[in-house]
Length: 193
Image 1 (cartoon, rainbow, N blue to C red):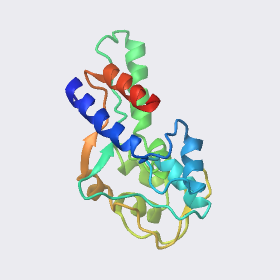
Image 2 (tube, helix red, strand yellow):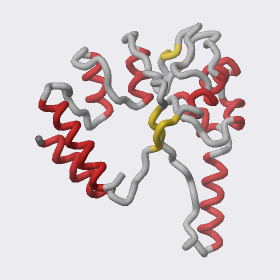
Image 3 (tube, rainbow, N blue to C red):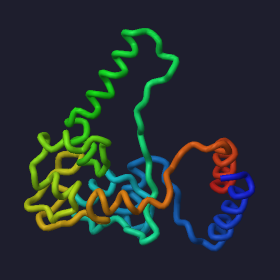
């Protein structure tokens, strides 16, 4: 976004804030969970593991699946062109290969996230669990969430559907952009207003 776009967005958000639209702004995982579980808010931005934690506690929660699409993040792995030491370069490749070897993807899957190489994760999860997370099929039995407790109930379907359905509906990707420092400054102006 440009500085003018950031200013316009902050101006709109300030109008909503003055009108009482926002209850609170969380800064930690636990704050997001507490705001929802105390019923102080009924809609909020939450990380997937926070939703799983509430679901495991029996709290009625689900993800919104807006028709215009989702926000997305990417934790892409890459090697700097400045890595010239052969041992360091090999270590970087070894790490990337390990990250895509399957087990890390299975762990990320249970947190509600995707690994770039999903097929390798199949051997680390039950076939029905893979079908739930990746193919969007009903869970054939209860499955654990990121904390080991049951957060997916038998018959449940993942909000938003399969990986393909979800991946085709990203409206924006979060990223650091040229005016990131200015955006952070304006966000802080909004929070303190």
